[in-house]
Image (tube, rainbow, N blue to C red):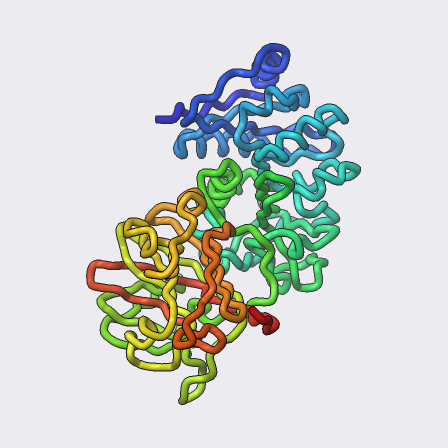
Length: 450
């Protein structure tokens, strides 16, 4: 069991951490996760910082990680930083680290450390390019505090998986000097029509994540107000970002651009899908499909009265979750048919079931090729949490990414199962299997040879 969170006042934390800096770094137990909250300011100081420190401490106490807090930049040494799984920059402003401290933090990130930036963390270290890349974007301006609508773009990441597709809240909404979308995975964005003062031309990211120079980074633009840190939804948002940064939860944080939805959580988009065979899928209010009964399959037929053409070269992404030891799969490369066995006999299944034989478990091309089990196990989130698949088909090559980690690379040699023109389906396996899906999207790719 991990030790409870320990939150210090900034003065006490500075004293303790200075001691750690001057002496050998304390050892960290194998099951001990430790987070450092850093809130030094060299510019504007937010009066919500104490509430933010307290909130992260409470999240640690409930989530099983230790929290230290400091405003002493002297904590940024190689030895001391090695004690921490992530560093939270909580509304820091201006130039807060000197050159030696910056170098220690760069080495920490490059060795796999985690970064969490909250609100004014984007208003920090404008002359340090490494930090700007890590944070993802720099602050430019903000309008008055006001309500706005946040569009949740990624509902699998732990920072946003518990949020509704539209999240209405009040905060101070930053405009940024650049758009992080090209190099980071945008988790949530602002609907600029829902408030006044947005200056990002309708594409306004407000929370994102990325893998950066060997480390993990999460940033949220929320958190200006004291009230934010008492808001359960915002606290869950922070907790998920911290869990990602420390490595306790896996997520695909590669940039995502150019995808179009096949199923976006609405009944309207579901009308383009057909149920083949027994069983069914239920659509919940939060836009999630959950299987029941079977053995059947829900497959994408298109919006016309007759099935449309299949897909030949594409990247398919979708989010999935199992309740326990449940069985399902994603089928690709099969001809249009209302017989689910047509997909079994003429296409390929990417399996969802982490407890079967290696060639029939999560990430496997079912009964043809196992996933890389070690990589799969490191990337897989447990039952009850969302996972993201990317299934990329180019010619007869089929590759699978789980939460951003490539775990399978398979080439078809059977002309009966050609991947060059086929449909996509979600399996409902049986009465005891409850598997959920949401946000099925596709990006068609240029046709390549094998």
